[in-house]
View: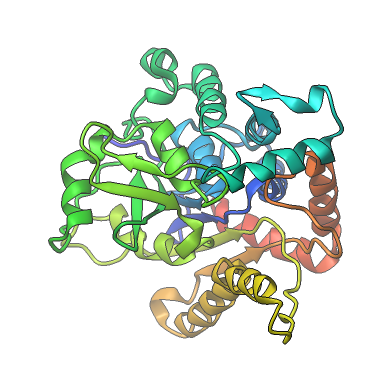
Length: 378
């Protein structure tokens, strides 16, 4: 058994991609909530619509992976996910020493500087205990059944009542993408260490492990070794290879049909970013190596570049009869001159304001309406 959305669209399945971006993930949730509010108004419903009832498949990376778990695995409403994301960000990214929040006794800037200096003596500035604790609270509150709520973060990612979603992570010791699914994968894969390990142990992946594996960014969180009793893979942040999981989402649409069947028709692909700033050119000075390295890392995790590539791909596909009605909508607010770090949880309200202003723009209003039409029943 697998959970099916409560609605369908005549043009085909509906796909949702969620970028990585640390605390900036709240921006994508604000945009998604606006989309779902308009769906609710268009259909004349009294209650807020759940994304899992309007998307056949979702994909998320890093912060987008955690959001995807809330929206699909736990089938939460966007408003619920926003409230919990506020709590998760504060719980996880508050500067701590031995688990104690040091902002209680000093200014946040000083506390953050002390917290960041941890990387001089250890591999990460945040431990994963806080993330485990935050995930436990969310699952205990929103678990799909009594067993979910009892197991909390140790509940399996696979669940018959879960919406279909994939979480992207990176197998550091194999240098390749790994997809963690909330549903059983019947795809026949080529033989490899990664594929064999996933085939043998995928049913043992927990919600907590998936959340930690997709967000284990080097210098931010510790790497995740799996399976825990006999480690064969080491997971790093999925954003290192797929900060925008649009390609993984598109290829995974085949999971929605049997291996012998053709690809399903697609009504829409909605891609939500976490905000962007225009990249600067690195300095040409030889002693600015750190700046160059930072710019290179920025290119590696650039979600807009991948979005533009997919837009060109979809434009070509729209000229073919089978994809003539497929709509691709990419929504990603500009952060302007705002310097908002991946871990700067104190900027959550500023992020919400920037996302709201983005929504109010006339051109963006049109794109949001296109997304709504591609989600609602015709």
